[in-house]
Length: 142
Image 1: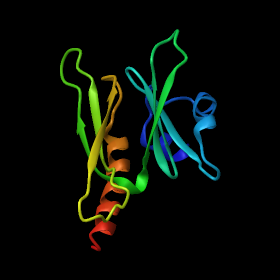
Image 2: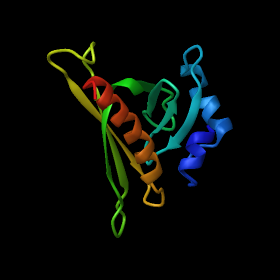
Image 3: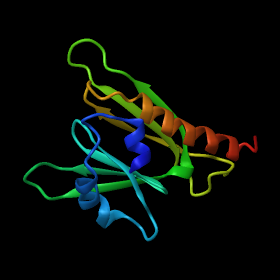
C-alpha cells in the first residue's frame, strides 16, 4: 500500500490492517492490495490488477455488493473537487465493459466515488489517469 500512501495523506485512506481484513477475502491469487479508501457511503480499493468497490446496504445488514474494474479497462477519469459549504468531491472512472477491449463496438460504463471534502483527490486522480492514458495509448497503438 506504499504507492497509495505516497499519493495521499488523508483520513479517507483506510488503515492497512483494516483494508486487509475488509478486502482480503476478495483478492485473487497473486493480487496485491495497493490502497483502500473509505468514502462517504461505501469503500473501494486498488490492487495491482483491478479496482474493487464494496457497496454495503447498511450497518445492520451484512449484505455486500462487490464490483470489480480491471485496471486494463480504465480509459478515462474525471474529478470534481468540493466547493464551499457541504459539497463533497467526486472521482468518476470510465471503463470498457465490452468482453474485448478492442472490439468494433466498444461499450463503456462509469463508476463514481464520492469523498468527503477534506480529502485531496488530486493524487488519486493522477494515479488513475496515468493508468487510463497508458491504456488509451495501448488500445490505439500510440
